[in-house]
Length: 223
Image (cartoon, rainbow, N blue to C red; front, side, top):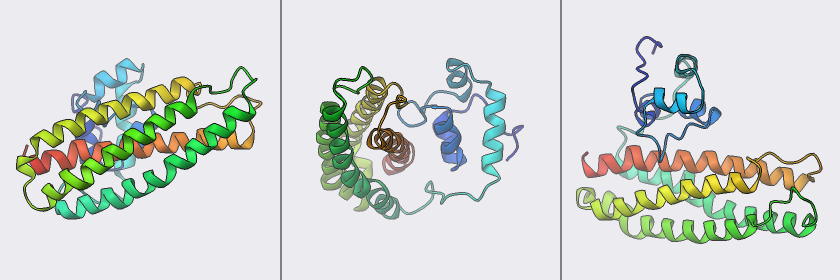
């Protein structure tokens, strides 16, 4: 795909679907293609003082790389399995570890001005909210989709999308508590590792929400 074929008025979500590797570009520039995926590339770039043409050139470069699997046409049951294995299982394992690290950093470095005070409490709330969210998907919504009843799942999908927006707000709050995930010069190894893993959590969660909001849900509902 050439930049001449890319339309800056296209939404971030549609580009992330059309160019599976585009998420790498959007992560790099912190363009929200999951909860904020219905915004155009042009407007999203202008808000962050980015040149849309330069971002489009990056998208062209990414599109020349070997593509990830095209989930826009894969069987829905296979897509659900991908979400469970790629995102749900790792998320359940990662959040408790991040919480333990945050508690350690706050306990050891409480006297330092740069200490991310309140981060452990914030991650505790995230862990609780995410677990409830995953249970709803696994026990109610996903079985409906796999059984072929996705067209009747408008209510559960609306709830999941609203909770996805709340997850996005939680990610923004995490950055506020951690000086944009940049550790101070005096940060210990655990502190630095915590911020690196929180950045990876942000990337994974955005990919997770994108795959559900912009691929799974519309396909299941027949949008």
